Length: 403
Image (cartoon, rainbow, N blue to C red; front, side, top):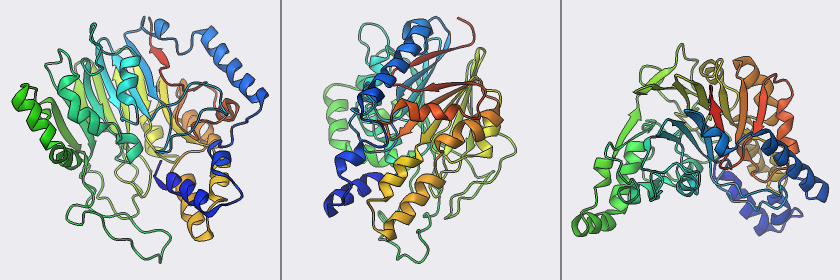
């Protein structure tokens, strides 16, 4: 989710609106004792059925691990939900002892360690990571990448193969200014205003030059340039990104990477004007997992997720959006509301309009906005969806195929 929410919260507080920062941060989650009891009961029911149990999931060769489930750059208190704190969005797909990570939100590296996905006694987190894939380059999806890049050589353990890193390339054009007629703001870094993952990482290399020179010269640590192999996903056969950023319908998925038994494909999703934005599908001999990235309802995503075992999909609560925009002046409320509702997927849409037509077996909600919502709100996504709905929690693990 864009940084617009954080700015709106700050502005609301600064203007002294009737809706306080504290009440807004509570989102639409119930703050009553009953709400907390309902949330606890729901988690207890899931635990009793074995849903999300790491011990149960480890019996599976392929498994889905939710490292972080919070959407957006704003870090919210967890008090309305009454559960554990949600960290920034990040998802791991595990096949045997190989780990593939989609997005690196706040705290992703710590969650990787806490999930037990490291190697041996020195569980530094990245020893088993084969690849990192970014859906798009909004701050809440890449916030941990600078730290991972700078400290990677000290956290890979015995990983001698290196780590493949995939993500969007340079879009080649600035996004449109909204609403139409608003004066364009100054362009940041005008000589290179829209770098992709390779260009972004080049700037990180410059920013950490002093540290990297110290460690490579004094301690003989590996240069991260030789540890991380960067790949801008080539979309030139499919689309030339325009200022509106709404992708075309694709005839077939985009091939990304085949790593032994693991095949990774992607598609272009609609998170306009941010583009390109990807969803990823992981196919193993045991089954399939799709991670949506940030998107509104997308036919491309439905095509990619067809008959998948798990669809991990973002979701936003429109009631939270209404509370948020109520704190803003009219000239800002319109673009904020338009982005949040037109470039994300609501509770009412995600099951009925995405998971059901895709025919997925399990719909897993992640990138939850607001992160501290009452679980009963998220469970409404079951309406119109005949499969199993799972409200994601940090460190939840789910097996694919047979144990």
